[in-house]
Image 1: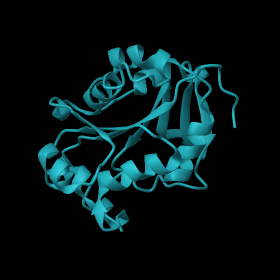
Image 2: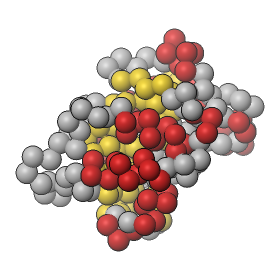
Image 3: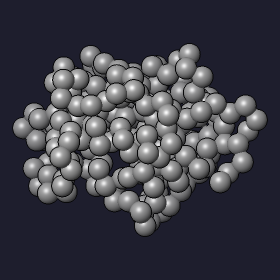
Image 4: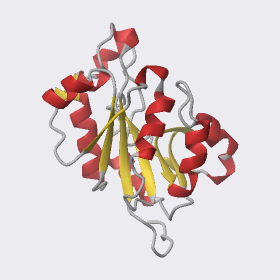
Length: 202
């Protein structure tokens, strides 16, 4: 466990679950079924199990149906009306929703990566040291999700996040500051993007 800065605030989980599943025939990814429940419910539970007491879920496509069909008790539901513009808008909405909560960092998980479970999230959380932290899971040394952003980075990430790039440009510019945490032995970082990918769901 990495030693934290004195007064470092808690880490909030931010689940990006707004995608419309364009290559899945327009089925919202949050509502795909995995292990008998909506994917968004599964992913929110992963964050909670790993130790994120506060979980903000960013909704977009099918947001009303998600609210009706998924059990997300205790989560803060964040609507992103601009979800169709890509992941960048959802990341901005998720970070903005943490203002005033006292969170010292945001751990961002994507709803369409069910192969990433609580153990990988715990490892990334374990490398959090304070508001200037930048931590990323790695798979055979290659950066992936989840990613932890200390609060000192939120404004810069929000300025640079656009389209489907999310925080990619910001992370490239701050590569030297990123602590990589190997998770390839406990997680599989596939995405559910196409009909073929649905075979990963259980």
